[in-house]
Image 1 (cartoon, rainbow, N blue to C red):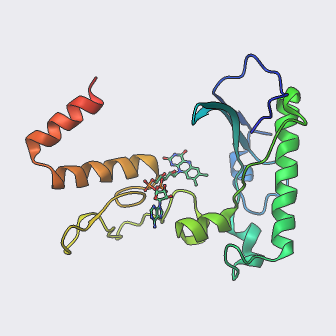
Image 2: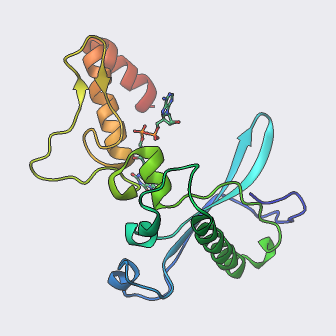
Image 3: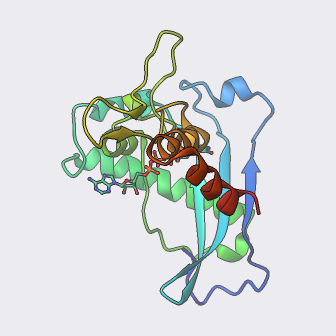
Length: 192
Ligand SMILES: Cc1cc2nc3c(=O)[nH]c(=O)nc-3n(C[C@H](O)[C@H](O)[C@H](O)COP(=O)(O)OP(=O)(O)OC[C@H]3O[C@@H](n4cnc5c(N)ncnc54)[C@H](O)[C@@H]3O)c2cc1C
């Protein structure tokens, strides 16, 4: 988050993707120790009547990078893991400052997450951001379940990611509501 002292009247919601070179395979190779891709998302957020200028950044990361701490759980990780995250944060802040020099010294870090964070908070195997791996013979838990009033929707019910979460919620909505009511709901909310 940017502090109030940071003057930037042109701050707007944008996404900047930084690719240090054109070799995508190298950037997505866990063994790559060179510069990686970085996505910088600037956004203006309103919360309880206040406006905040936020920056979210994403960098490719792999289970191999955090394997040393694979047997630890959130809230109980050793100092070496804290140091790993601190080092990552500092380097990413440096890259943000290189791209937007006026934000240098004005960034307040609110939170940071590693591959292990996603594994332990989202229960995703290997800490993948998008959820479980999709395989040809995989049967996901979806829609009405054989227990009264229990339905499954969300990430990886149908597909990974936001589209998967959205599509599975449509399926659950249609199961619960009658066709006509459901169509009206969709028309009202999505077709205008
Ligand atoms: C870094 C990152 C980048 C991503 N980028 C993309 C992308 O570019 N495109 C894309 O398609 N997908 C992306 N995803 C994946 C996408 O964000 C998820 O697939 C999607 O948000 C899943 O939606 P959901 O509703 O199933 O779960 P969530 O959005 O995780 O919502 C679950 C909610 O339940 C709440 N909750 C959990 N436990 C409880 C409880 N016990 N009681 C009450 N509430 C609870 C949580 O706080 C959360 O608000 C990304 C994910 C990450 C982590």
